[in-house]
Length: 273
Image (tube, rainbow, N blue to C red):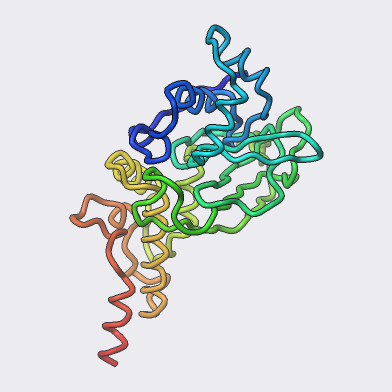
């Protein structure tokens, strides 16, 4: 079954994407509808032709090779089954309850490729690397990716795998567990330093969402949280009232707190002592 996907404006000016032929660019967009929530699709030109370009006089196999040369996709095999993965897929797709259909690559991911999936219980056969409980996995290729869409000085972050004790959809104490927040916000929220006093999550999410609409990426905001946490550790203020509320940290400051270089604050404090 096809999926509704987003097309980010940066896609059209990606310096590798623009070198593709028009038919290859169309296929690059179309396979997003066929891929699962990890950006993985079955590398089968015949099936892709029937599902995505049924009325076009094109060779989908040749177009896939063109996308492979221009680093729009990568190809891998699992137990003899050919699969593909879309570059930069996780940057622009944020399904509320993502699921995985295809097995993950066993090798390390190249630059520009990532996996961020919160698995939910389905009747389908579990995919490779799937935890038996609700799991969030975030893996990034290190360094800058190929093309404008992945670069711009943003460093990829490698986050840990966390397995919680219950599955999405299970009930606890007679009440259904529900996650109202997207996975990329939950990662930032879990990383945010603890403070003394209130720290409303809903307000933080609204502020975070506003910054995302201003085209700040989740990775940049997360990196800012990590720098701020290190600063608080150096000041021995973790868990104190001096920790900013998250709604303030994600707020519309100019520049935002998450873009500030908190490492320089640490150095300044060391010089004073």
